[in-house]
Image (cartoon, rainbow, N blue to C red; front, side, top):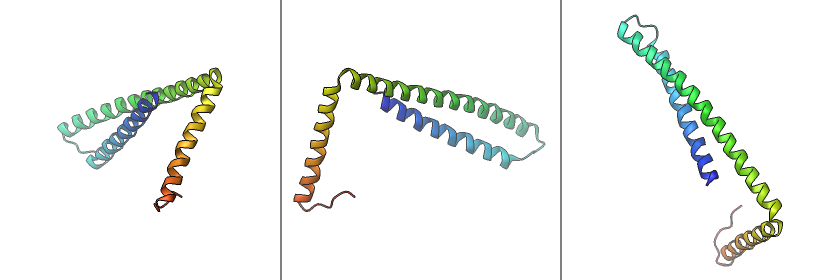
Length: 112
């Protein structure tokens, strides 16, 4: 669950970074037009960019915190249940090995 949330947060941060970049390009394209309406629009866009940057920083901090929590939880689980962790690893190894052997046996191309 934490992994999905971290991935979602990272995707959201990338999208927000893209929006900020596009807004900055728009401001550069607008230039220093003297029209009052354009000046007001420029101010609103600047304010939105500043807000987006703050939010992006918050998202990146939260994603880092959640990653640390997931890592700590996994380490704690492995320390408290070492044989269960070994069994899970072995089971996954057998499963993946069986899949690869089955692909080779049926003439499917192998992953390289």
